[in-house]
Length: 248
Image (cartoon, rainbow, N blue to C red; front, side, top):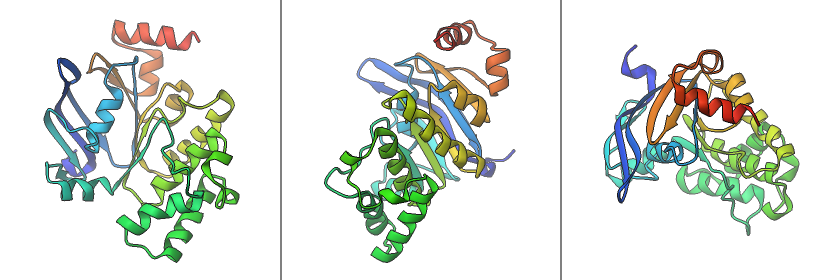
């Protein structure tokens, strides 16, 4: 397989916060159209790895390549590459003073240069995609957590990204709202969107992941298929983590 088949290539990535080594020599390739789910205990470097992929965190050393282009320290280039990457966070990061429609059209107009009419049409398409077109004129404070997260996903998708990154998108949600967000992510996976997701939702891992990456202390401990993870984990650390998380 050549590099062109890998839309994300991470090579020997390190990220330090003072004396803390948050990401410790990680290398990871993500194929176009595949879903990679990153799991592991809190503080294992999962979210930092995700944030390094789109340079929300600047790596201390190592390389990140997106669709054949290495990310440099050039701000213009970082912004151009970042425009191709949708990111959904734990907290929804919606603008509370803007309606759902305004939240989804804002970046389209500024970054993609779309007219209001075009941006609104795209926004409505994406709201239909996540199942809440009737909320276009609502304000975030009038939505449930699950609905707010679906708006955040629609906002990211409206930019027509090549890649979607999800950083524990359900961890701030009440249990009954988790499924509605995971269903949207599952649909995206089935449509062939390239996705890297940090998640504790093992049902999502089973049903959507092509590959699972288990991290601990900033390193990749194990990289396998969902079937390999659940039926035949190779490392004692992976087995311990699974025994703890599956017991709940």
